[in-house]
Each structure stands twice: as C-alpha cells, then as structure tokens.
Amino acid sequence: MNMVELIQKKQAGKALSQEEIDQLIEDYTQDKIPDYQMSAWMMAVYFQGMTEEEASYLTMAMAHSGDMIDLSAIHGKKVDKHSTGGVGDTTTIILAPLVASLGIPVAKMSGRGLGHTGGTLDKLESIPGFNVEVPIDDFIDQVNRHQIAVVGQTGNLTPADKKMYALRDVTATVQSIPLIAASIMSKKIAAGADAIVLDVKVGEGAFMKTVEQAEALAHQMVQIGQQVGRKTLAVISDMNQPLGCAVGNALEIKEAIATLRGQGPKDLEELCLLLGGQMLVAADAYTDLDQAQAALRQQIQNGQALAKFKEFIEAQDGDSEVVDHPERLSQAAYQIPVLAPKSGYVAHWQAQAIGEVAALFGAGRQRTEDQIDPSVGLVIEKKIGDAVQAGEPLLVLHSQTADVDQLRDKVLAAVTIQDQICPTPTLIHEVIQA
Image (cartoon, rainbow, N blue to C red; front, side):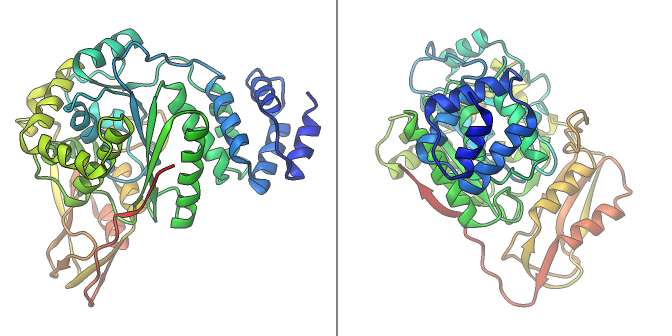
C-alpha cells in the first residue's frame, strides 16, 4: 500500500475502498505508518469528510484492531448507551438498574472522568466496596444472573483508536465528525453491543457547542450503526447547565438514588426516561416509545428499579445499605453555600466552569493519575429560570476545607442573574432514528 497515494486520494475528495481502509488501520496499529503520514491523512479527512460507507469501514477496522468482546453467551439483546460527556451526567447509574429491572440485559463497560466531565466508574467507586474490575467471564455470568453489570474496559480494546485519538489531539483534527463518530462507535462495537443508544450533548458544557454540530455527529453515528448492522438511536440533549443538581461522585450517587425513588430532579428523570425508552425499543422489548417510557415509570413507582440497584451493588461487592441510608456514603467536612449577590432570575450557568470548580477541589481529574475525593463536589440550588433573592444559596459547595473564597469567586463568575423572567432551556433538542 502506498500511503502517499492514499493521502492524495483523500485530499482530492475521493472515497477509499474497504480494503484500503483496513490496510491503513492495520499498518498504523502495527507502527508501519509514521505519525506524520497518518496526520496528513486525518487532516485530509478533516477537510474532505468521508462517505457513509467509508466511515463504517473505518469504524469496523478500528474495532477489529484489538480485542472484540464476545457477549453472545449473555441471553437477550445487549443494548449499550453512550454519552458524549457533560457535567452532572448520572444517567448510566440510573438507567442501568432501571432498564435491567424489566429483564433487559445491561452489560456496560464505562470509563473514568477527566477534566470537567465526570466518569461513571469513579461515581460507582464512591459506594464503599464497589468493584469495577470484573473478569470477562464473571461479567457475563453476572449479567445472566442479575441482568446488569457495569465495569471498566477489559483487554486490548481499539488500540488504533487510542493511537489516532492521541494524534488528533495534537494535530487540530479533533473536531472531524467522521473521526469522532468512528472513535465512539468502534469502542461500542468492540465492547459487544447488539444495539446502541447515543446521548449527544450540546451546549457550553459539552464537546459539541452548537445544535448543528451535534446533529451532524448524531446522524453520522446512527448511519454508521445501521451500516454495520447495529440498531442505533440518538438523542441530542442540552448541556448549557449541569444535568440535575449534583456534581461530584458520592453526591451524584445520592441523586441517582433519589431519582430511582421518583424524587430526583425533573430534567434528569426526563432524560433517563427517554434514553431508557429508546434502550427498550432498541432491545425489541417494545415497539412504541411512549409505552416503553410508561413501563419505566411504573418500575420507579413500584420500587423495582430501586430494588435492582441494590441487587446490582451487592453483585459487585458494594455496600447496598447506601440505598436506604445514603449517609453511609462519604461526606465532605464542610457544606458551604454560595449566596446570590442580588435578586432576579438565573439566566445562565457556565456548565464547563462548574465542572472545573468541582474538579479543582477533588471531584475530578486534571491528569489521569490524579486521585479522586468521592465526598466533594457541589449541589445547585437554583437552575436556569429559577427566581432567587439576594442572600439565597445559588449552590452549596461540599469541601474538605473551609477556605473556598477562590472557588466561590469562580462560581459567581459562572452564573448570570438578570431582572427579567428567563425561560427554562429546552432539554431535548432532537431524537434521531435511522
């Protein structure tokens, strides 16, 4: 294979064949192609894009560059859910037991947080004793027995993606829609999913800043899924303020428990019901989304979703008593309110800045080796559209130190209070199906 010719072909806007893409990814994974040539090829993709077929070829080549997890021993259709990342996004922790409580297998491999976005594994590990390092055979057995398991990635999944992602980060090709889509979808497919539900975040606290960008990414991923034989659905949801109210690991577990009791924030519940309904439809358990969502509401009301959460925690060696006694979770030494400087209506929260504040005092990581403090974080008391009086709490900082003046200043810089009534932002921008 002549790499220069492949670069020229893509620079000219021509489509590469499956054989060319397969060989490209195989050779790059095996260090037969230097980074400078791969950078040139990805820059050509950045400017010229890819056809639907090319994107699907790239996705499958990346998926097959390492281990392919075989979940065929799990009974039923395995539906994976993926979020493109945000602040206060606790949906997986709620959705996994909620969907599993209806007998649908949820076999999920999740990641850790970095920067202003939280990680599902870090949140689950704030439950005392909870084990996310489960061998693949035990993982499969647990799903067959309990319909649910959430663990860290095992094996050598998508090594091509790891190399390409690192290169994209230093060559200004991160924003390429087909490269993003192939990166996400290759991991989902390699992890053994039969069907995939995507939560594509959009807004100030998300990777995709505009609805147009989010739509393009969502459509590309749904098309890839269909091309490679995986039923794929997508939701575009708002991230112009944190989802729910809690930001921080143990705090988000508490909020997940409240939501499974039917007492959580309305935006978090609404999004979970929509994503969960799509998971049931993708699993062929329901053909009608409204009926699927009604079934999920019933599981919350009758306590079955909460019971499945306790069962899930016990199966992974965690302290299930936290469900009935959330005070058993780690608690920070100080709860310090940040007070509104004036009366009015909350018009804007800089979601990314709020995530960064939480990370600064231990709820997240700036580097992969940073340690997490599960107890710290913040809880928002006033969301966009809410009225607030001067001196009322806007949010409460959960900190291990009373010295939070700098963090308080960052919070106040991240919120806008105006005199006029402000509408509540749209949570669901679009639902995309094949």
